[in-house]
Image (cartoon, rainbow, N blue to C red; front, side, top):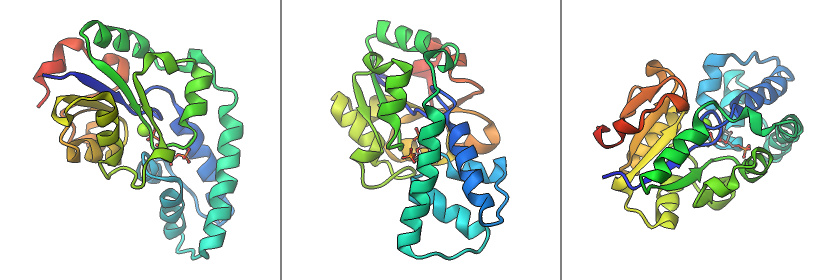
Length: 215
Ligand code: B16
Ligand code: MG
């Protein structure tokens, strides 16, 4: 019996994934690395520093730990600049309605984002009150695909992981949800998210009737 729904943020509730992409692409170009949408899939859901390491390895670029910190900060400053224009209208269609339907079924609602910027994005979108708990990148030691973030969200909600469903757009996020012993709805393409319990093209496409049939 599903008793809680835990939502990823970037790519599930709003398209901040696009802003991460253009900020990383800008940084990569400074090293002569051309970042493509295919590479970008590897960056979704993983931490800022890990994303940087993946990008640098694409160009066989080696930098010191201190430079890594500087570069990650540079990318983050651009990202923070880009997201300041985010407005509530950018919440993906059907997301708020889905949350309302889940609430009517007495489910608890959580947010679990690897992003340290998640609180600001939530504030700009004005959707904080929709969630019973918020877990972001500042509260965890290991990012997705490690299950830590989802286990912490379930713990804060007081719900057994086996009774939770996660909505995720990243391969690393789907792996994390399954490793936490949860069901997972993949938002995106079956090629990327094949391991998910169910795949929808957009978050708002999920039908509440599917809730207790998730494998
Ligand atoms: P930040 P999610 C993740 O958020 C993004 O998918 C990922 O691309 C990003 O690197 C990560 O947050 C860290 O973000 O640099 O803002 O701390 O998809 O888990 O909501
Ligand atoms: Mg995501």
